[in-house]
Each structure stands twice: as structure tokens, then as C-alpha cells.
Length: 248
Image (cartoon, rainbow, N blue to C red; front, top):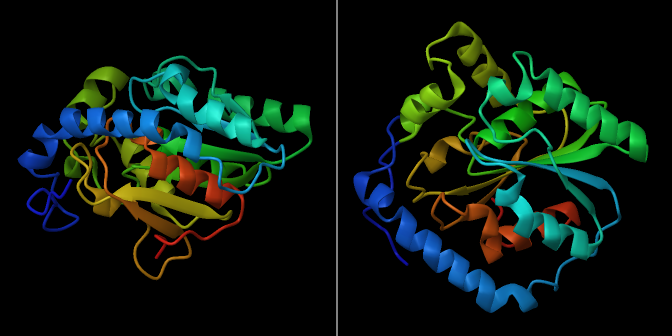
């Protein structure tokens, strides 16, 4: 589904209205493709059993990631939810992210292995911050449609963020966390992003050109992006050490 007029002109603006209005039809199309292609998703590297935590997007819970969790477990990974309820920002993870850090540390201690973090949207920002603060616990980070490399005003959901989290986007604490998330990570990082995302500007969902982080471009809505067949394949290929044909 071509959306040549639904891409932002730069990284400094929110997604165009056309991209926003087309979110639900494109999300439904993606779910249809998932059903049609589910049985074809096994042609990827098998998992090595290492632990993976999936972090949901804003207002979502672990239920939003059940498809990816099931898929990764089927491949042979130990994929788990974050077990922190709905993602309401600091209301879920704590003012300093202490609940999230404790969850990662507990799985690391239980398995004796570093944990891969896969975060969708806001969950990806949290995953990057966790990797900065505790690289000794984190194996790698994969973000999916996560606007970590630009201001919240380059999204169509910053007002919802303020209402749901109780924080203002111009709060010093919020600004500091975003700066932390935007810095290059001390662990391997992959960003999966879409240029025609209708909720967040895809150009701020990856590290700048020349940065060490890897980027994989897809064409997708923001809603249900984690259920797209191409996203599931990209995640599996990344976990399995394959570069994939769409990586820059």
C-alpha cells in the first residue's frame, strides 16, 4: 500500500494527517497478512534459548505482544512479558525505572544470561534507557517504531502521553530521559521503523546516519506494528545474527 504523500518532509514535524487517518485500515491489513503468512514465518534462524523481555507501547500491556512472544518461544527463545501491567510511563516502571530494572535483573539472575530487550514505541525508549544504565544485564536492544531520536512534538500522541503518564513533555526529567535514550548504546542496537508511520515520525525512530546502531526500514502503520510478518521476521533475523536485506 503506497503512501507517497503520507511521509513527513523532515524529522522535525509530526506525521502528516493522511498517515494518521490511514492507521486503522493499514493495521487491519497487517493483521490479515499475519493470518495469511503465519505458517510461513519459520524460515529464520532457530533460537538459542536466551531470555527476551518484550516491552509494550503506551497504554498497552503484555497482551499486545502475545503474538511476538508466542512466535519467539516457538523459535526457541525464552520470551517473556515485562509483567508491569499497562505502560503508563513512570506510573508503571517507577520514577527512576526501578521496577523495570528489577524485572530485568531478576530474569538475568534466574537464567544466568544477559537479557535481550524488545520495545515497541514507548517501550523501546525505556529499553534503551535500561541498557544505558545496566549494560551488564542487557545483551541487545531491538526497538520497533520507537521515537527515541527526536522531540515528542514530532508525534501525534504527545498529548495522550501527558494525560496517561501524568508528566509534561517539557518536564526536565522527561527531557533528560529522552536525551539518555537517544545516545548510542553500549550494547548492540537495532531500530525497526516506518517512514509512513501515522503516530510517530519514523525518521526519529532510528539513530542518525553514521551511528553504530542498525536500522531496518519497513512500510507499516504504528498500530499493531509488532504483529506485522516483516517485523516478526526482522526480529528473528536480528536475534539470530542475520543482517536482513532491508538493513541500511
